[in-house]
Length: 159
Image (tube, rainbow, N blue to C red):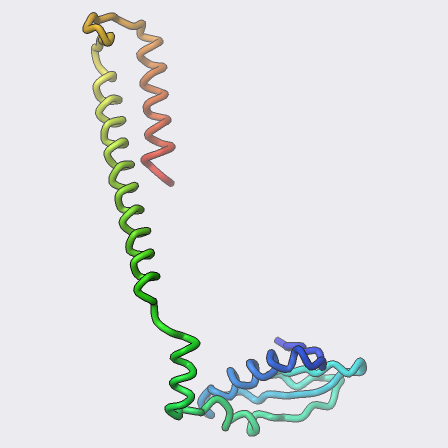
């Protein structure tokens, strides 16, 4: 696979990242890296030698790159890749807690819907708020059972 990098100043950091990434590979695993300019003046890097262009093999030039293990470099990396702040940790923990609470509420709703479906599956009568009871037709009972089963399938059995 060939990587193309335009020879404009604002893209040199991309070439630097590519060179640094490839330079960090151990020599035993490192492939040959070629660099060349095409007819339009664009700078290219690849691990395969181009067929039509003359390319310079630059693998040996890359080995010393990306090897700075000094304390100053480690300090700079620590600033860039700093750990989680107390505020970020608190926010993350709050989000996780809220997600767990929502999952528990959903599990309770699903349990209630399953109990309701089981309750209306056999001989059944319904009760009004005032305590009086009423019967429903078999068709109405089946409609309610289908609705409850569909709701359980949608909300409780994700697949």
